[in-house]
Image (cartoon, rainbow, N blue to C red):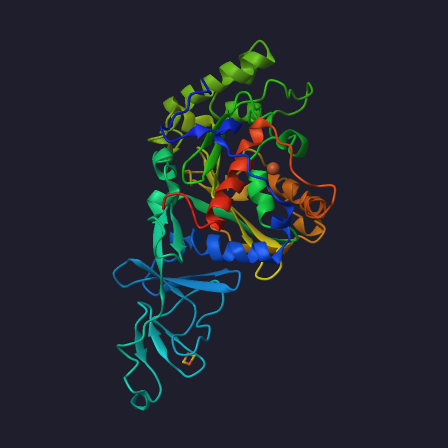
Length: 449
Ligand code: FES
Ligand SMILES: [Fe+2]
């Protein structure tokens, strides 16, 4: 059943015959020339996530997205729409605003005092009569295109890029049953790491490493490659759908507390009713779906209203090319994004947004692959320098922190003469696919154009 490709645009993401077989040259992980090519042909062409709609409820509210040397402001307009601008004064380039966000009716340039409306028009300036033509009415801030999906605010610097829904296709359609905009960001983590940004694209495009790096996960999400479904889409996005039940080959030792049991109990299912481990995993998983369908309303899981059998229990994980990952579960919406450092190709910034649905009567949320409960309230940004890892205190139960332990070794290995060309399993097809789409962008031939 898991071999069924559900969406007509999906290619089999475990079939290497869907690849060209491009060479994955190692200098992409450390060379400044690659970094420049990526700026010219990739970052200036894609759609970026700047933040969440929830951060800008009122006219004048704005968020700032600093990306490499660039900075973009996105502001809520008086008519409720969103507009985005490069964060550079139209007079002589002074940065207009600093910081992550704010709320203002206009932006005042600290250099020569030009004042800009949040719709990008110049309102006033010094000595306007000293110009051959009054700059007011003539000069505007340079706009970027802005759109929203899933409660997220997106923008692109490219006037020729496909519109956001076409760019993301078929992701919005696949997840149409969810109500992402209702989630609360219960944890917001940003980490500065010493490795190229593509570490995360590679890492998130395969689950081959999970049994080694995240042994706590298979007892709750079946990570077996032969029960998972793999999909690759024409616009460069990939995903894996893993079953929300224990893997049959990762049995916990007898007597150890079992996180799947806790899930069953939460939906009034007695885990002890099953005669053996296999029945509990398979029949328990089916019973869990049935119980969720029966009890969602009375238990206050109102966002389950439109979810189908797959949405209710499985664990879909998608990489939206090139630098965003999403895991839309029944109870949470996890978003990760990773971005290059402004000048050093061997550094990057990684973010994890843990977003959960508010449930009446519940004050805490526990992600199914984590341990520590999180308050079901909006979190502030928690920024950390990874260094050698000691700084990640408090996050040790997070899967991505386990991934972070591998960054130093990848950074070192990519520079070794002993590393030439990866030798990858079929379940790593999406990793190759990522690099092939990257090559298409760098050759000025991105998908959808
Ligand atoms: S640079 Fe902004 S007013 Fe001169
Ligand atoms: Fe991982």
